Length: 254
Image 1 (spheres, rainbow, N blue to C red):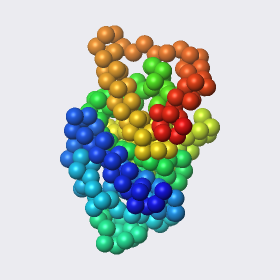
Image 2 (cartoon, helix red, strand yellow):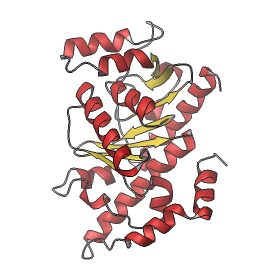
Image 3 (cartoon, helix red, strand yellow):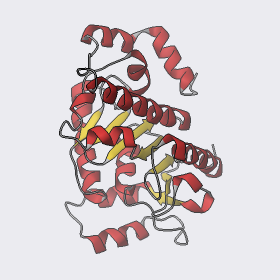
């Protein structure tokens, strides 16, 4: 796909994530991105709204330039602002989201092609509680496994932006060593969630299923607490050939 076609699909994804009735993001919350395939990617510009996204809401970014900044051990706020201006393909574009570092890491090391990050009321009701991400660490129902993967990646609260990019890179490497694959869902304690997809549809599916998962978890705590699936059953669901076929069809990869 051309860069313009990818941008059109990214606008559609952003509008879907930003729908007010879904309660995933309000005002300028959340961001989306997509790799172009030529060493660049599109990402939502800082301060723009997912619910009103259009072509002017996105910035075109040089991936290698962002990764070079991520390799630095530290940067102050002034340096971060200069870096976000420096990585633009077109200097006329708006300043990209402060989460540009996170998106670059996920595109470069997390196997992502499409990314959606939001702050759902449902998920943050849990991630901002004393339980943090712990309730998500065991599978609860088959469709959650099929769409969001068997295990989510998790990072503790880290200041959004440059240092969060570092934390996510460390978690990706830990996750890959532990599971031999990339995560589909990233949970950020006291912050929000990120869907890591191969298609725009998959990123949206992950976001919506994580919202459902969160609502189910909240409901279980009103009735005595979660009743998790046995690990052997979760593994069977994750590896079933018919579920892998359904996973591909749902994501638009079939």
